[in-house]
Image (cartoon, rainbow, N blue to C red; front, side):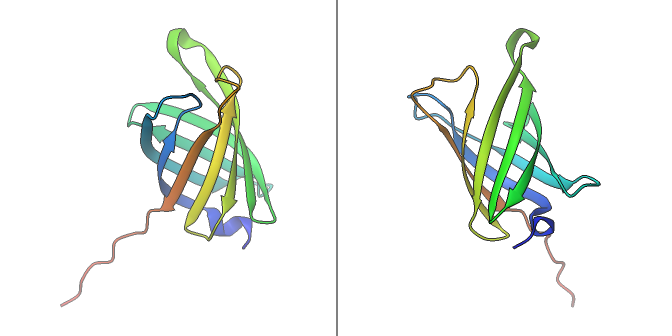
Amino acid sequence: MNVEDLVGTFSIIGSNQDASENTYKGTLTLALDANNRILAKWLIHADQTQTGSGFFKDNILVINFSYLGEEENTFKGVVVYRCISNDVLDGFWSEEYGDPLYLGSERCFRIKAKKELVN
């Protein structure tokens, strides 16, 4: 697998970095910059945008991310994905103000373009 194989949009389901059993859903879009570094954009619950950049090696994708939270505070963290295949990523994450006793988790599944049926 190479970094170009990861470009696209994924459906995500994850859990937060705390003791709750709350889950979240959204999308993750991966693109490449001019240096073949990953550019990432998450849309969580259709209203929270997070962005990040990172790198890929040995089927491991690492992305540093940030987002504006409550009261316009910027939150930063890192997510690490094990690339199971071009279409499935399995990850864990931590952010600086999260509960240090826990890691968040995230599974990503590629959204494939629908093919039209031809009569």
